[in-house]
Image 1 (cartoon, rainbow, N blue to C red):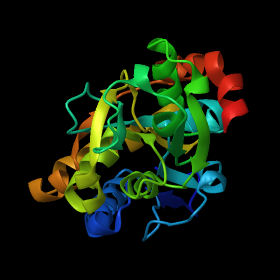
Image 2 (tube, rainbow, N blue to C red):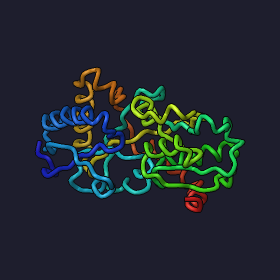
Image 3 (cartoon, one colour):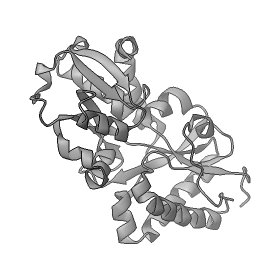
Length: 268
């Protein structure tokens, strides 16, 4: 079974915390062997980059994880969906949510009392860090004008530290990152969760645009690799399985975003 893209690239940037990088590399080693057995030519190592967008769009992309909002807004016509990892976060397989977090001494226990707050976020096209937060405000009837200013801090972890340092007042952190932060980031000791957003499809695994039979081989390769991991590695990565998602599953993210896009763009 020849690989259409023998010079391939792979990246798993979304939860690549230094504290679990060895576990991520172990996961890639298992994926690499599964993909070789399925007839692909995977790279020896993961690529790590500050800005993954170009590689997400590369015709040489073998496997990557991205965010649901960039997937539907920027990538859907250039990639094929392999599936969506399931995580140990008490949510449906292949789904996730965000926790809305404040400093424990803020006195803010209900979003309806939000006023003149500084909102911290990781990226303007983040489903968990931006879109889900403002969709939740809209669903709760909280005017966006309650947000006085929005500060971009480039990563969920930086946002968590910014909350602990009182540089920002409120933020939305995806549930997988929050679980990792509770394990490895002391700043969470200073924070409180005051709300949970509604679930949406989680962070998808993608590949370059391919025929269905190739995508199916990659999907099965991911399942085989996950099953081969020691329980300790699975636990450190919070991995519990792989959901067989389709492009249509992600359309609610796009529809929700379209409803509030102009308001968000005016704020950020």
